[in-house]
Image (cartoon, rainbow, N blue to C red):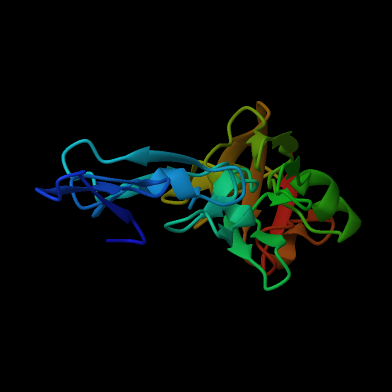
Length: 210
């Protein structure tokens, strides 16, 4: 079989097969797949020890397929920070960067603090300072504030409190910002003569310093 040459004995009592290279067995029926170098692009071939008629190609990085014939740029995981890699029709790859990362391989950190400043956005409230971290940012909050973006400002809005003018008022919020007592209220005409400043996070209210 497989193009082997049949060679009889002198007395023609029997014959044996002279196999072509890559074939073996009494009738040359067994094919050594690796002899014919089926693995492409530098892949290495190994015969299955339990099933000699089968072989496996161990492919170099970026190659796949039974014979390592398919080039896949994403096989080497070029995209960092758990970003999504997509093979293109031209054999290249594209990275879909996760939030907080940029660049061809998504290995460059986005400085959210600088981006917010350039867009005049406020990431950290109540006087907090924005600190860039790998793939994200954190807010260093002033004493007396906390929570995500320093948005939490513990206060007590129940009961009657003494205002900056010495008079008692109800529904007046008193809280601390950096150890300074502040007053927060909706609209009290009596305070019009007192120095005020806008409250950035309560647009319908006024913030007074004591």
